[in-house]
Image (cartoon, rainbow over all chains, first blue to last red; front, top):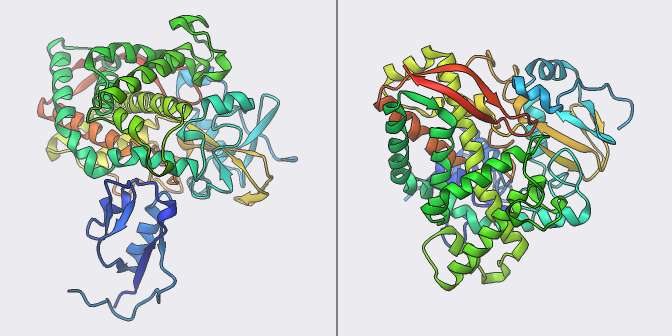
Length: 79
Length: 412
């Protein structure tokens, strides 16, 4: 089983580039009113992919969410 | 800076008439740590490796854009304030200003401009083909991006030629031999206070202000209206912020993509097997667009200033030191690119820095530029339009912009 990592968003840093929406459209979307990212899905990804998303966020707004167990034993339930 | 080894010359504008000094950059990159480059009364650290450029870009607090200037030289305090744009700001000002325009340039919203772009590209390519060729810069590379950005901003098409003229003078302003008289375009402002020290900047400021006033009294669905109407949550732009943002949008929105398209055509003319490859594929994939961008590196460098003592690649960097990221070098870093001097449209991973090193100043127009380049190549492919270069290109004598003033192409 691949490690899973949860991502969080520090909205104060977001400059609205849209890289996150391009890479993971089911998880992130740029709000057309505020010009900043919003989380629209369950932001849990295989760890390697999660690290790539963090790396490709230019503003540093997307971060590994360390408040929640970063490595989940299994993927969360999806409805 | 103390007694570090000294870098070979990579700043004399005349060098760039022959292209990017890759031999010097290879020498710099092979040296452990960073080299110090003397410049005017001081100097700067040459940041050339891919990993170092990324490290600087991704630490905007430690490496400031707002201190001194983002070019090689410092500006006097009054000039820095008068000329301060989104490029020369740090958070929170940078975040506030950028958010006002960022939504227009997200991948999703840029897609909305595909049809407009394709229409312009078709018109320009049809004319070029009918005439059998000509100056690729003047006939295709320059008009495509400026006409698209002006549509997005809401500048009337009838004024496009005037803004192209101003932009051309701004490019010239990046060289050491500008030709405009200080009072050109009715300029009365001290040149020190104008971007690129160019009277054309004064004219562009004036144009932006007039257009802003028009949109205030008669709002339209365009970016200029959005900017002059933005007042909520203290998000309003000051007059200086507005005119500098307008200036950046017009200049960066056309000069850089023009450069990419010029170098792209030259690359396909130099490596015809790569064009054949695309013809065989029958489509323009993302790797081709990214390789064109890597190859072109339209902006050669940006500078930051260290806000604290730190180190990079083992070299101590002191607070206040200038740190210059040479994208032109990092885009050919052999640690990242196999055969970096081959133009290869099939590179699968291509984390080039033609839009900057991946920090918060990541190019606002990145997705627009990618879309424009893809559509232009698609329409060239549709027309089976292989290009042959005639004679040498005329380059801009600038260590900042990888500009091409003109290059003759014939349709093969």
